[in-house]
Length: 210
Image (cartoon, rainbow, N blue to C red):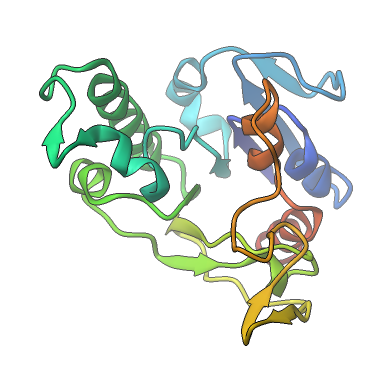
């Protein structure tokens, strides 16, 4: 099977499919971290017109302007920041329409992944996620609720549950502080590290969909 992994620089998902014998390629604006020859550097939209080449696409578009946790930055004092033409609103519109475009690409099997999304983006995209998952159900000591928009693919089955610590009666996994915040401090690479696919999730994709 020919598999396109969109917006992936780490190669984690690409390699999970390749080790199972699939012809998998990643595509991103920047070079692959693992310097693989099976990586296309460029805009994913330049590859999508070749949709007849691919049996499946799994894409991880940037969530910076789409995720629910960032919705508050679109407003201040209950009002839109500088109106709908502000830079952040403009970036949100661009990100949402990019998401919609790749979700509707005519590849037979499609998965587009993103953290829980705010309503403004969902309204543009016109669809809610088919399924939400947690990495702690796939062998990772981490909590990060994530949506999967699926077409032509079955929903996942959980593979390996990781028990949390209990703090004041609330569950906490290794990527959380006791206050419930993500542990990664602000840095130039924070977004890249937070977006990296957990190995157990990559393996589940390749095993259950491959």
